[in-house]
Image (cartoon, rainbow over all chains, first blue to last red):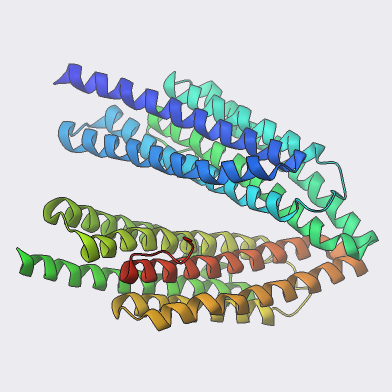
Length: 216
Length: 216
């Protein structure tokens, strides 16, 4: 039994790495489509979300099978519970990629009122956070998980910069308001992506220590 | 077998009505907390989201049991598939209630720069849409489902009003920018709640006709 269980845990790790890669691709394509006003790529991201949802279901089924068949306790139980939580956060990242891509399509016919460099930077930072979260889970690396959690401040700071810039633009020119509020929303979704990457690392810490960092 | 299946379908309806009621309460408490700057109620909404998530899992399990044990076809299969999709949209509404309540807590220490009457109206309209969607499902009422879908325009119009007002306020006074962008986000989440209520009614139509209104 134990050997089969170990093999299934390896499979769980592999599926999570796969899902992490899918989410990373979604974020990368999302920001590329946004910056280049590429409607086709934005539509692809929206379609691709179904594959992400499918992968979530697959992992969920695997976790439930493990829970039912193996009735794991302690460390193994925590590992599987953490995996179940992590995939929910990953799936939400996929949803936000879709949300942003809908804004990309909405804005595709007008030229941007500002350079999107900070938003691009936000996307890049969240991708790093996501990759590190998954690595932290697979390697049971507490330090890496903690790095991700601290790193969320970088994304929050970038969001605040974008917000301040957009507010200033609306203040100067009311006609910029419509697009500025759409871009603000896009930035907000990237900020939420950072939050979900943080959540994933918090679950990694829970899976190792049995203590969720948010619990007192 | 058929009798037991019928009883299980009744149970499914009841659980969906229950979840609809939970979501309705979440929206109602969310807007009350926002308008009255009631931090305690906002925190309750955030906690309550776990119960909503739990109810989603319960219904999901029931649907999967029905699919596995009864292997339904045609109409019954559509009904259960629609239920599975509907609960995802309901659960997202719960998430948005949490998103809005986080903004409520964020803004609780400052007085509002504007009356929230349009946002209140948005909340009210989405609650009506949600209740009607669930009624349409239970009574297999196509007309009611169609009414909900059309009614989403009312919510969208309200959102555009709120957006225009907030843009005008930022234009006049840059210091209003921070709060205005938070309120804009809150309004956006109510608008998304309307989208999810619309989705639910689209699944109702699918469950009756086998054709999703979005498909050509």
